[in-house]
Amino acid sequence: MSGIQEVIDFLNKAGVFYVGTVDGESKPHVRPFSFVMEWNGRLTFITNNQKEVYKQLSANPYVDICAFTSDSQWIRISGKIRLFQSIEANKKSLEIEPNLKNLYSDENNPILAHFSYESGEAAFWSFESGGKPFKIIALN
Image (cartoon, rainbow, N blue to C red; front, top):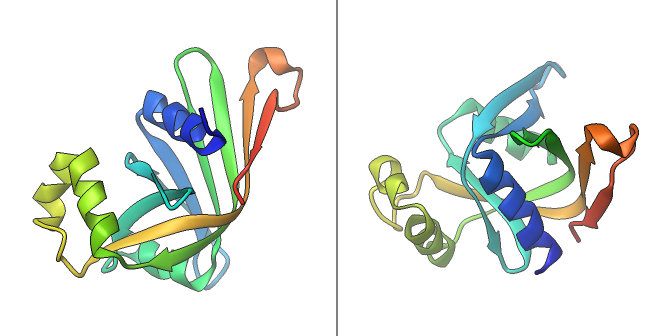
């Protein structure tokens, strides 16, 4: 299993993950997300380009993601993202999660925006790991 797939599997197991951004005044904002996929070897998530989170992600490409599972493990993903638009990525997103069609209708919807980690790391933690991550996966 690739490192990216291990990260995706963990986020899917958690069900919900939280994306941390900052606004123009450097105030933190954290929001729940639930869709993630691999695209061209990169950890990728989506949002609507009409939302404040889109503006924040576009203005400051340094993003943290955090998720916790019922077996008391968590992940912290830190790094730099980039925005991209792709009909093929839209199709894959809608295939993986058909419920997204309720929000975006089809792959041609221009408000569907993808962000991929260009660099960074995913650190896996647990209560048993003694205050240190028990695994780190590079995202570049």
